[in-house]
Image: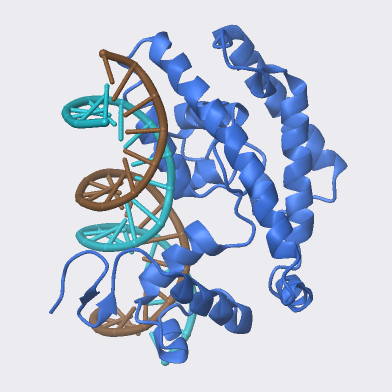
Length: 239
DNA sequence: AATGGATCCAACCGCTATAAC
DNA sequence: GGTTATAGCGGTTGGATCCAT
């Protein structure tokens, strides 16, 4: 039996997903909703096990995912929440709309785990690189969105999305508002990241963010069932 | 231009919790 | 109460890409 990356093992395909596999999974979710992942293979002919399907959907195909680089503000939130909760990635992810626990975990490992031993110099170098890449990816994202919106199947897809994810659009609008608020609260995230690693400013912003969470939740039609990603930060009971 | 280290990120694994039977 | 299926979590891996030297 083939066992290397991208081949079959125990009857299941492993490794990187193809566009066709993605399409099958998306269609399955459109028809049957999220869950019952072990039925995917039987109902779609996809040779992926349930676990792999779930992971692919949750981490990559979900329509409410926010693509692109972690912003400086998100970075600060991650720092603060990690200080509070440790490696509880899924808990941290709930405070970052559109980000997955996997994404945050990856980000932490590459940026902060080693950063402890490195100098601020490396921190700024890294941030400058991120900033450049982020600008590029934001441009690409806009182009991709335009392309998708012009597809002929979009009206139907939108309708189906509305059924499956009745709050998707609202959630994205809220997330957009959320981030525009964050980005407006300081010039740091939109300006060239040169000498902006001032710790005081950073923590001030975090406390402002706490205030903002409270304000946002009180002044919008917040519903914790349909917008779980915007839950207020709180220390778990067991702490 | 070549190269080696750093970084990114998708995908895997093992384990645990919970629900259904 | 035991078993099985499913979902979710955190840790790890490895290929691709970036970038400094």
